[in-house]
Amino acid sequence: MAKRVLALLLAVLLCGCSVDLDAGSLLEPPRLTSEQSAVYDALESAVGSSSFRFKYPRGGSHPAACTLYDLDGDGVQEAVAFYEQTVGNTTSTWLSILSCRDGVWRCVRQIPGEAANIDRLEFVDILGGSKSILVGWSSPISEKCTCTFYFYEDGQVEKYKTDFDYHDLMIGDVDGDGRQEVILCTCGSRVGSMVLLHESGGRIVRTGTADLLPDIASFSQITAGQYAPGLRAVFVDALMSNGTERTLAVPVERSGGRTKFASEDNENYAAFPDVPRPGGQAVCADINGDGLMDVPYCSLLPGYRAEDEDAVWLTTYRSFLEGELTDVGRVVTNTSAGYRFLFPENWGDNITVHSYPVNREWRFMLTAEDEEEEVARELLRIRVLLPSDYQDKFETEQYVTAATRGSYEYQIAVPVQAPEEYAVTVQQAAECLSLLN
Image (cartoon, rainbow, N blue to C red):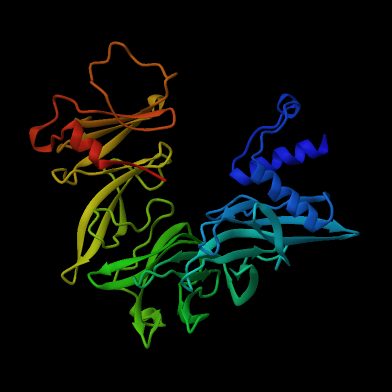
C-alpha cells in the first residue's frame, strides 16, 4: 500500500499538478508511464531507501519536486529532483540529477543542498549551448536566498556556487544579444542592491552592481527592456515599506565585451521621475506594443478618495519619445476580476467607474460637468460571469463575450445612448480588454 501511495505522489510531482487525495482514489491502481516509474525506481535505488520525501521549490518556473528537462540539448530529457532524507537525528536536503541511456534511468549525481529549502529551480542559457541549472536555496533562519549554478554535460555535473544572495531575481536577455543574464536584487531598511551576472570567458562573473533605494519591502517585478530607442535598462518595480510602489530603471551597456550597468550610482538612473504609487496597482509594461517599456503613474478616478476601500485608480503609462516623457496609454485594472482595460483614445479625463459586485461588473461613466448632478452618461459595461450566475432576462443591454478563462466569461456591452464623441464599438472595446496573468 505504501508503495502505491508513493507511486501516486510521483505522478503528481512529475506533472507539477496538485490533487485531492481521498480513500476512493487510493483504491485505484496508479496509472504511471513507464518512464515515470523508472525515474522513481532509479532515485530510490540511488538513495538506498524508500524513506525519503520529495521537496518542492516554493516558486519559480518549475515548482515540481521532479522536473524532466533536456539539459544538454541532445533531444533526450534528463530529470532534476529534490528530496529530503533523515538519517539518525539529521535531516538533509538533496539535489539529484538522473539521465536515461538505452531506456534505463540512472542517477548521475546526488548533491547535498546548500540550505534546507528550495526557493526556485530555473534553466538558464547563460553560457550558450547546454542549459545551466540555477537553484535558489533558502534557509528558515534567513530571508535571503543563495543562487547556485550546476552544469550538466557528457554525463557529468559541475557545481559553480556564486557568492551572491538575493531576495528576488530575474533571468532574461538584459542587453539584447540573444543570451540570458541573471539579475539578483536585495532589499531592506538599508540601501538595496542589484547584481548582474554575465558570461565572460566561459565563466559566470559579476559584471555590474547598482544601489537601489532604502526601505524596499519586496519586489513586485524585475524585467528588462528598452527605455528609449536603442537604449536598454533593467526595470525594478519595488514595494516600499510605507505601502507605496516605485520604479527604478537602471541602464545597461556593452563595454569591453561585457554587459554592465551604465552607472553604478543612483544619479544616472534612467530619467523617469521617482513618483510613488499605491502598491499593487501597476508595474512596468510595453502597454502599446511599440517595443519600449512604459512606466506607470497612478491617479484616482473622479469620485474616489485614496482612503476608499473600493478606490479605482487610473494608471497612465509614459515612455521616452524624442527625449521627452510622453503619455502612451491609460489603463484601469480590475484585480479581483482578473483583467485590465486600456482607455480608447477618444476618452478624456472625465471618465470614472462604478462597481456592481453582484455580477462582477464595472460600468464606465462620463462624469457630469456640473458636480451637483448625480450621474453622468454611461459609455461601457464589462462583467464577469459563471454559467451558474443569475442573468436578468429583462435586461435591455446586449452583452457580447469578449474573452474566456476557464468557466468565466468576460462580457462587454455598449449602451446605445453613449455620447457620439465618446462612443466605441464592441470590437474596439474587446481589443482594449486584456486578461491578467
